Amino acid sequence: MESEIRKQMMEFVHDKLQRLSIRESELGDGFDLVKSGLLNSLEFVELVASIERIHHHEIDFEEELETGELTTVGGLIRAFKIKK
Amino acid sequence: MREYDYIRLDQPDDPEWNVVGELFTLMYSRMDEIGLSLPLCNDGTEKWLKTARNTSGKYGLVILVKYYGKAVGFAHGMVKFLPDYLGGFAVGAITHVYVDDDTRRSGVGKAMIRQLEDWFLTKKVHSIELQVITGNHEAKEFWNSLGYKKELLQYRKTWD
Image (cartoon, one colour):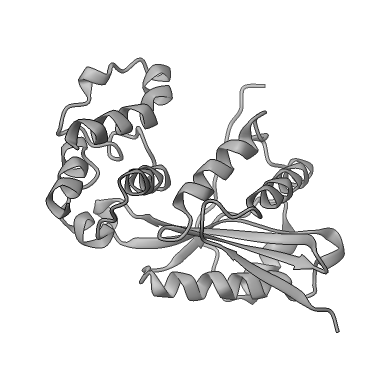
């Protein structure tokens, strides 16, 4: 599950990473996809929606957002792992 | 009396998405004319459609309007969130509203926005925001009439 979500995340940001010359390996668990400027908040919502659709599992977006970690690579993975 | 059909697209596999794509392209042709300096890219419509479809339902909604089977307008709203230094609230974003020339001033635009607003209420958003092209005076009147207040001006410098 974790590796699938990570892979999906990387596919989603792949083009942007290339344009910004960022390697996937630089996106550790603490990397914030939004605060870094890699995704805007609409794009981040789209990423969450696409993961939800593929895994047929919805997260409580508001609740997860309050943790302050949802927009990090590790936080997003945890949101799906914990509620599964 | 004219009868309009308001169709809520909240499922990604709805066949009506293609019609919305056509209106989206038309909308950008018009925005070019009134001063948008960022043209729609070659596959821009397909890219936007992908986003709108993928987020439809829980995070986004499109209202499509038809008049006797002909698509005459659409509006799209999405839930986004503010940065944490501004409170991190969920806010509604009205990303696109288009009504064709023959249908303007018929109340269709307002009706679509009211539907989006009702949907945003269910999402418990803090507020609703949107952008308007500076040269689109008709749109400014429209949003004022619906109670929206001007908040920001966006500036852009290009190198040509």
